[in-house]
Amino acid sequence: MAKTAASDVWVKPIKTIGNGYIDLIMRCQDQQAARYAGTQMELHDDGTFTIYATASPDAPLAHVIVAEDIADDDTYFLGRLIGATILHNQKLAAAYQIGTAVYKTAAGTWTVADKDAATSLLGKIGIVCGPADRITSAAVKDIDDALSATEPVDICV
Image 1 (cartoon, rainbow, N blue to C red):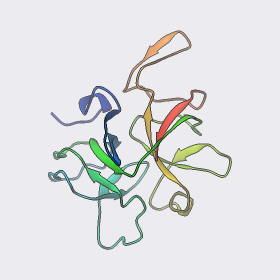
Image 2 (image 1 turned 90 degrees about the vertical axis):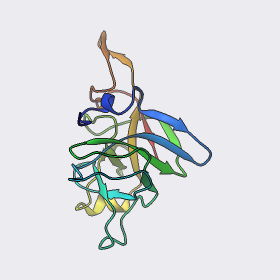
Image 3 (image 1 turned 30 degrees about the vertical axis):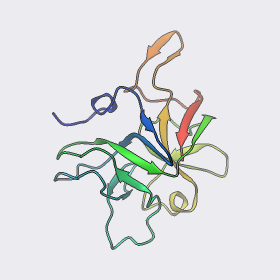
């Protein structure tokens, strides 16, 4: 089964907080082949990651690696962010899903990061990582529901 939803990867956005790293759910492009634990990833389009290419020596987030193997057709994976910390009660610029790569704008909100957008590469990059379970407008939301611009969110940087 392809991992095409955050809940296919892990039941919570953050699996492990280790000594100097955090393992958490991230979004990726379909890699077209298996990627193994330890593979370095880089920022791609629309808040996703892809395998690091030597043609991109200035790729931000060189500290993102694959924590558990990625199979072909997966669009979510468990990644390891080296030297990470979690920022609480942050504001999103729009609705984004768990695992989306975002950057902090001059206005102080987090918006989707993209390798082709210079502002994405110049700002601080983070991963939307929670909260996983929440209640908004009297409705119970889960890990696969996007977080809105009006909710306080957790960002792993």
